[in-house]
Length: 447
Image (spheres, rainbow, N blue to C red):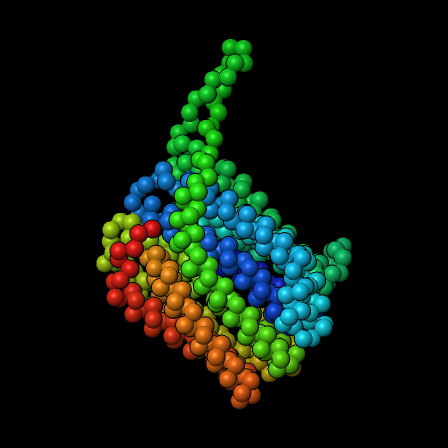
């Protein structure tokens, strides 16, 4: 479950520690954290196209076609990471200057981004490996890797933010550096594992299924050398881009709307922004099980189609949605039973916690819809109907932004009404996704 929520896990960890520093840092991580999630989601969304293609090949038992998909994904992702790194390094300050009015929050955002931007290379390369192992339904290593990443980020956050254990006291900049180092370590572990893993030879990751003997003149000795890995295939990259662009745009539109949401909340005041970031931290925590199920249904739906079991796709999606709802609501119940305890995830400021309690009921309702709606939406994406999913996403976001503007700017309502935008967003997403899956219009889509 954890593997598909790595960036949420990092942002959550950063928020937990910065919530102990001050309102400015808590407000800043809300804005820059969502911004970086938007950047990271581009790479993750691109990798989902590869994941769907790999799962489809696994279902059809076309194992020799997996390696070209993997290498094509990796080459494009790293090229994209370089462009986005340059944008964050040289354009990040101009970008935030357009939206952030509070100078203290603006300065904190840039301090975090200066160190966090380098992590994009590890993030993008890592999600490609995640796509490979998720696509072939071997996710155990992803879970272990995410645990290592989370623990490392916690350790370094404590040391670098507060200046503990001989580390310099860097504040919010330390959170950015800690997250980047943690991602780098997680990526190294992935590389070691993929080199050690003998099972991936069946997919031709390092060449053909079996090693080919190459004879070198070393006196009377000969040695075995593996053949070179498959070459990058531009045709496959084009196919991945065609499939992934709607998914990428979905993520940009979705995360972009969340970024705008927090920009609007910042106009309400520093305290309102801090409260919203506490709720976002809790939201991210309770999202983790559902994102795991959502990633799984991407693979399951595509695999079933590869096996020509089209009639089982909706049934499996529904069963996954029920399981996701049950797990999410079991976790979310704690928020209703002991709200003050759960809200300490975001801060230890008792005044902010008391002001945040009134939003727990709204967030519980949001999580109930999210836990089901996200599954059906990702089941739709898993069928390859990414263009249709994008249209649904755009429709949801248009309503979402219009609602926030009217509620906050025209009627000056409070945070409860502003956060209800998420509730209505997932109602629309759930209805449209279920309708399209039941229509069977996706059955003729080729991936």
